[in-house]
Image 1 (tube, rainbow, N blue to C red):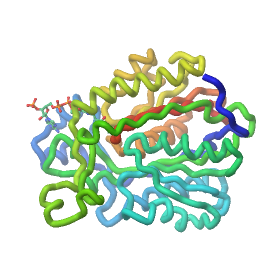
Image 2 (image 1 turned 90 degrees about the horizontal axis):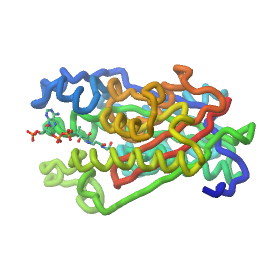
Image 3 (image 1 turned 180 degrees about the vertical axis):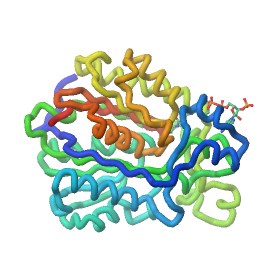
Length: 335
Ligand code: UT7
């Protein structure tokens, strides 16, 4: 593919994540719905997930990530130009959760907005934020994925309530100092033709909150699992292979693949189609479950903490989710 026009490369210069303290095991969920630890582990790869305290909102996790990012990079809020928060569980319909983060960290110069692309939210937000670095418009962009999925789970629906968790993760994007490391390329897609298979219908302008919408459970996430499963298996591999190949690489060139963590079987199938050795695939679904926009930045932050990325390494991050949406971003890791 022809090199996209850009003045600078957008590099990830800091990573951070936040996981709530409270651990909810599969055994805990066995007490709520007709399920089993065995079914959840073998069908999804999930053993446990974290839930945020009931009285704490998504911004609590996003702010913890933002503060950690500043600390890791020895920056203050004033150094940040733009904050993007990818979330489908904002504190309020508006203002954006990103504005709450902006205020909390004293990023008085920054503009801030939320991006809604469900499980693809983080890769969409990273690609978007990078444009402001590449064009020279901004020097530092904070990109956070944060979701408190426990607030939209129907604990009477075993098909969904066992799948999700709460969490947040994020990165700072800055101009690459060496001009080599940073975002190489991205490939992003949306297909709004199958809204029915994954959604939260209530609470918006189509079904404004009412006693009736609550009685019908329209404020909960609903999913046709097997439809989304088949779509995710195909698209996660397809977009990942397409992006690495059009940039002249193969799976063997990748150091780390950080996929959205929705189902261990989806990840394994994608990794197999890409010919990736297991040690190249970041997996934490067993401990964190599906935290929607937060899975990828949490997994990336954990990988960085474990020393799994060195300067020059190729990193691929891929999301698939509601919309439907899907896409990949390809980075060369910097110092
Ligand atoms: O992040 C957003 C994108 N989301 C995804 O990528 C998720 C994609 N989908 C999936 O991961 C899988 O489809 C699920 C994990 C949601 C479901 O796995 P599956 O292998 O597709 O199972 P299924 O929905 O076909 O259900 C198989 C059986 C059904 O019983 P019958 O009809 O065969 O008797 C379900 O009722 O498993 C039953 N079942 C459960 N059993 C015990 C569904 N949920 C549960 C449960 N515990 N929690």
